[in-house]
Image 1 (cartoon, one colour):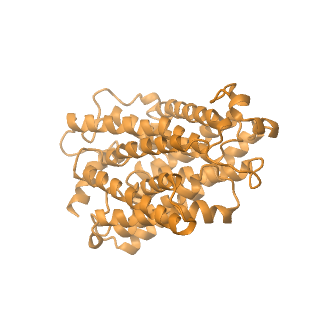
Image 2 (tube, one colour):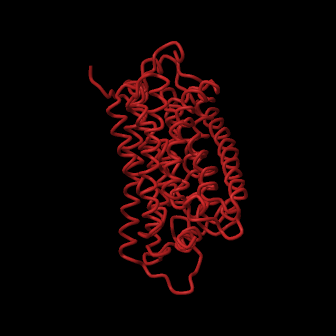
Image 3 (cartoon, one colour):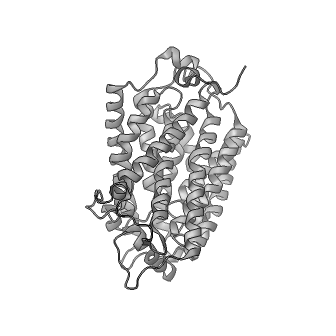
Length: 428
């Protein structure tokens, strides 16, 4: 409990930039360095990690289109973040949005401190989360979407879905006040992106030939490299969310290793039993499943809890991409919802249970029971699914009306690399 309260105390200035400590905040060089490295690791995930992981899952004629979407949306969100994103997410406001006082970061000065590190680093760290969230979405509708529609969708969805979710959970808004625990982005990042990807997959429809032709990953070594980059980068994602090089960061680090290993083994074990062979793709998918599930729980569950959560996530992720996907009758190209949505939900609900001190966690806030915390976690999941899903539907609809969401079938058949970008990944 002491560790939990210590972590909360350190996080208050980060969650509430206007929060004033009794003593004047002083920047700590070690924490500054730690947060800059953590930010760089998340940025490392955002471009090469996602691009290689998703790119390898696609057919060779569409790999460059996916990579272009990743780097273009990353750049768009980076610009929007400094113009108005940060102030709407972390400025003092109402339960759902911040304010416009910090447009173009005009209220962030060179020596301003958030907690024990410079506020500019906080801007960059949280901006990297926004970038990777949007990058995750493009895997849901890959291989048939119009590039210009992606750009317009991202602009709308980032503004009306990502920013309010970040404010509600981390900026002192509705879900934060309710007591939701989301250490590093189970709702804000994973469920948020997953439901947007799922809505997009439905609205664009299935790829031409889906269900009749083989749609196999064109480059599994690329998938493995992308997975490895995401895994390494995730330590910045989770440990960095402690906002200091402290004991909570150490806990998050070990929990990330443990949960991920459990998920890989869980996925492979079930795949081996059901299909007769363990696959590299299964191991990579299990790795991501474990990383997703531990994200909201990394700073509050014990090591044993992380292992349990990881094993469950490995099995749940496999169920999500095989069984649930079939039930939903959707062509979610890179299984964004099956992994990030399902395992994000598992992680959020699991956080409510495994944070219990009796189960090795850091303990709940004073007066909070397990049942109450699980209820709050469930509400946060539902709010995220509804808010993000509705905004995504509207954003896709607007993009479809003004630009058209989907490329013509002949362009899709030939491949988006050549038709949308005039390039080819592999010269024949």
